[in-house]
Length: 278
Image (cartoon, rainbow, N blue to C red; front, side, top):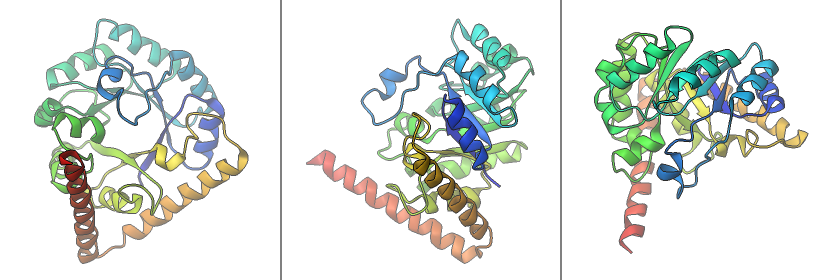
C-alpha cells in the first residue's frame, strides 16, 4: 500500500487527512533558492516553521511526520536539531547535487531520525548509485518538477515516459530502500490523469506519493468547509480502491496503461513545443 503524503502546516487539517487515511504529514520549511527556481511557475512556496512542526506533531501523534528542510547551508545544524526536537520522524533534504553532500547532511542527523533525500537535480540523479549507499536513509524520493527543469524537459511526466523513473527506482530498490516519486491528482483528473500516474506507481513498486494541490484542492493550505473535507475523504477512498484494482492487472493491461501514459505525455510535449514556436 502506498504511503500517502499531504503538505500542510494546519493541525486541524493534519488531523482530518490522517483520519481519512493519509499516513504521512509533510511540513515544508524549504525556502532558500525556491523563489529563484519556481517564482514564475504555478507552484506553492510554503512558509512553514518549526512552530508548525511542533503543532502538527501534537495534533497527529500517530502519523508519520516528515519535514523538508532547506538545502545544505551554514544553518543546517540548527534546522536539523530544531526539527528533531519538534517531533519530526523523517527529514527531507532537497536540491543536493552529490552523494558527498548528502553524506554531510547524514553526519549532522547522526541516525536520530530517518533521512529521505529528494532527488531533483541532474547531478543527484546521475550520482544515484552512490546516493543510495549513504548511511541513514529511510527512503529515496524523486522530485519530478525540479528534476525535469534541471534536465531541460518540457513536462515533468516526461521522466516517466522516457524511462528515467524506471532507472532510478531500479537502483534504489536494489539497494533495499523504499522509493517514491511525484504527486498525483484525483482519479480521472489532472493534465495527466491521476489514475494513469497511480498505475505507474504500482508498476514500479513505488511506496510513497504526494497528494498534489490538484488532488486536495487547497485543503492543505487553508481551513475549508466540512463539505470539502467530506469530498477529500471520498477522493482518498477512490485512490485506495483503484490502487487495489491496479494490483490485479495482467502484464498486458499494465503495458497498455504504460503505453497510454506515454502517448498522452508525447501529445502534451508536442503541444507545448508548438506553443513555444508560435
